[in-house]
Image 1 (cartoon, rainbow, N blue to C red):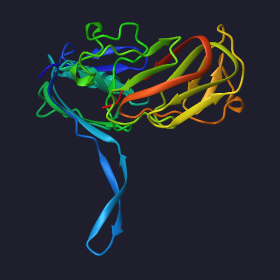
Image 2 (tube, rainbow, N blue to C red):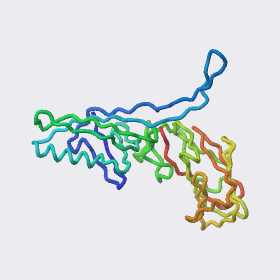
Image 3 (cartoon, rainbow, N blue to C red):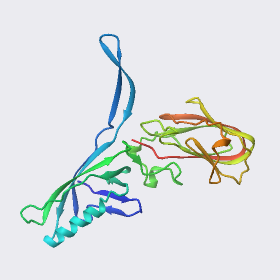
Image 4 (cartoon, rainbow, N blue to C red):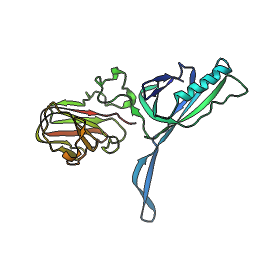
Length: 273
């Protein structure tokens, strides 16, 4: 099988195949949906709530050492690569545009009959329940040729996707995820620079939601709305908002900016699959 990559939070990337850990199998399950039921009448139930739980990915490696001493070194190296004090990300060369944020369950690299080779199976827990895009909508080059986006991202064909808008009061933003991006779970960062006399309002007319910021702004100020919290120049300003929020449904979202002039607004997020 093609190689698998482990990316640590400090930026180190391990190519398992290049390091001598041959990938025999890398399997990931479908989304782990669960359902809450409500009895309806005598002969049936109705699903009243749907949620997604954690995923367990399975990675099987063929480890071949030169001798018993090298075998022990590989045992320690593998433990270091999959150290799960912090989260790390796993991706495959087959679909390099997606990655899973995971931690490893305990595993044993068992040596059989003193042989310097073995197979090892590693279970990886993704508590977020979804793969995520490697790229974000804030990337300077939001194109397939940039190497961060591909077919697995399900971007609409032939559409010039934009996530930065200048002096446009009405526009649309595309959510390529398989789930809504909710302000209280996977918030889209809204970054605004512009002139506001009294009040700025940002609306998502698709979801019929809005958020208002009740302060004047000048173009040299940066307002970031992170989920439920407005932040002006790195200072939380929750009291200055109407406590509204904006979710982004799957697919196209029609947005509107009210009360601003000479402005730029940006939307920064990953997508989830």
